[in-house]
Image (tube, rainbow, N blue to C red; front, side, top):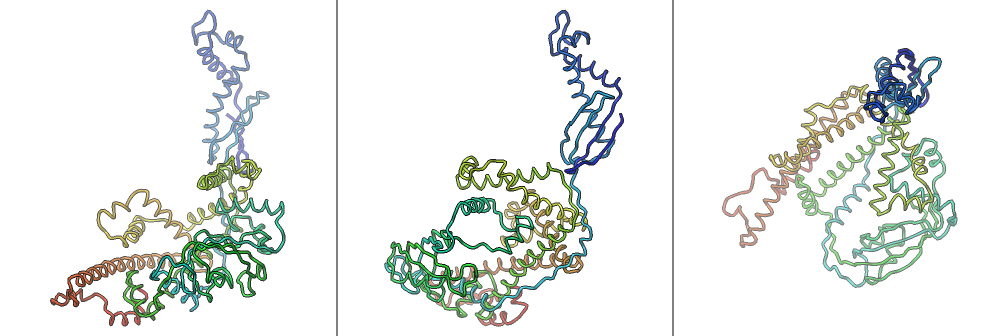
Length: 556
């Protein structure tokens, strides 16, 4: 066997195998015997007819075709082994030539290859996010609104301070009218929404174009649409735009009103300042409510409900700011790691076969189909409504599939290059962290400690470690130190969750004891008999001390 190996386009290899004529002749005779067992030839039992009669009966071409197919399977396996080509998937038999010598040609999709180049030299500035007082106050206000007490759930007419449940539809009534192009864009927007696509799923050129030319809403475009929005009627805190609440004051329950508003100059979206919007609002329900004051008693209730050490208002503000800061940092790090990965991808050399891209597209189309099914729309209905075909749908996903594939291949190579491994101890620590909020009974462990759960945890940990490496690389820091910091943070989080659970159980026991004392007319509760509560349980005095202690504030 004479073998020649060539690299071709689309990340494939061509294997050209030349054999001796005698080998083909032997294969033809074997093929003739096989055919004679399947075809009845007069005067001979099956499998016993001579070559000449088999050829006369089925033709020389049929024998050659059977011989080539049989030889091809064996030669392909031998060629793969001898060439040391690592196929990504099944190869293809491309050609056979009889002259000047029997020659077989195969094509093989190759495993993807990634050269990260100087990826460790990538540097991007990281701006530590800051949480301002307004954000803290907004978070406290949300806590306050979730703690409202309903005094009357069937109020007839809306007034300031009431909570209303509304159905609202609105659209822009000025601007450029929608046309055929707009309808085509709407189809694209529909598909993007169903597939979960966003600006990050487009290629870099499209993303740059979008940034240079922000979308300007057209006449008839939706501004806000919500069938079940709940808002508190505060004229100083309009939920959608200035003047919205004012139009709801004095409206009866069940009534529908229509009005128009102009987007004010201080709107966060500069592209819609000065635009006119029409609203169609139905007041489905009106409630009279009592909103708790933001005082120490409110802070105590909130902290107890979360399983925190009892806090006063100053402590709750500090704790809320800390949680917002942690959340902002996590979000900023995630976005930063995406930027670092993007830079590494841009500088990397990435090759993969078309087969791999086709599989990625298949997955995205299947996900799209599942999203359609959730809305009770079939693919055939989608093609009819959008005047498109399956080929159109696949082509639409091609760029985003290629981009996603490049990113995943680079990330996989980084995991290999950085020698990121997840130990059994890492899995056990994550498992303990997950269970810490539920307890450590055998029943709880049986619920969480499954092979599927461990596999999911391993994948999550690999991604978490990879992101920490990206975070360190982009900042020019030691990834090992970043991983240790992450492990410490995870351990702290698990400890915090466990402590919260214990406090919740303690608070529940205290509340039950207090309720029992009231039911039996014992104003002093269990302590009246000298059976004092747990001496380590927080008191109003210790709560103030704890909130002033930075270490206690961190733990909570």
